[in-house]
Length: 375
Image 1: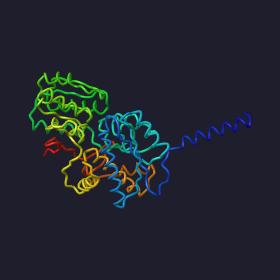
Image 2 (image 1 turned 180 degrees about the horizontal axis):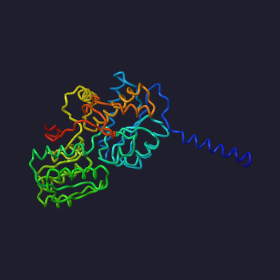
Image 3 (image 1 turned 180 degrees about the vertical axis):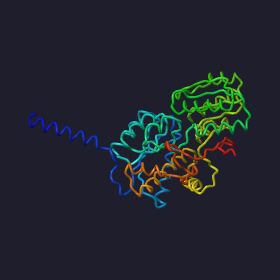
Image 4 (image 1 turned 90 degrees about the vertical axis):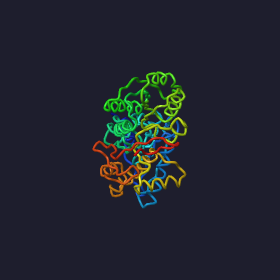
């Protein structure tokens, strides 16, 4: 090989090494940690993303004001899509070289974007991904503080059945989204475990806005209850159209219903809807009261998604504390593994051995235009 060729080959190797090294670790951060937050600020899940942003901002203010580590959070819109989620994760990993990532909002987006973080060894803390499988299964750098549908729905359905005494159900679910499909799977099992007979099942897609055909078919079967797995944007229209079709019976929703936007958009039709939740808004625990005060100060009506986002910040701050103030990616992973019985708005929080959330869920029902905890 000639000298010129050897020089050219060596240069290529150096460039390749530099590209490989770029983003492989967060920069030394004596001034704190840079955190990326991928949130659905536009698109189908925008109603969740806006409140997640408010929760994160309140959490950062709480941590820094309380003498915790300095956190610089970069918030980007994942647009509720896999494609934009991937783009945002690439930016966080390679250009911003963040210490950790919060989000993305939807499980659907997480299934596509999280593998990038896993490959780059960047810790991700999911703050709203509730699909029972396929999230933390991606790898040991993926964690979450959001309870899965499998952790919430069975208990919620049991409490609803005890209260409403229903024996049959009609089921409607979104078949083009990881979250809504996973929710349906859990609902189906929960109904079977309660010996509830499913009279019929219908599906829809996220872009749909007319559900009258599906609802007419289900209502015609005369079930005792309608069971729906949908994102808030779809859920409000489904509930409103069900009432318009003459349905006066109970409706049980999945985790996607847990947003003030659902109640606002569905209006009076939302009254009586029951849903499991990972956040007890009535909790008198100091951590929850502190969260409520912070949200009130910001003029925000909090929900489960803002509580989980706020908690995500608190958990990352605790992980850094457990890592003795170190903010490298591996340091944060090691710190997350030591988080146990942490006081949060969600209650005493720990991770399961599989890096999923572990705390007590609740059940809520829409009454007088607000979610109220069912005791």
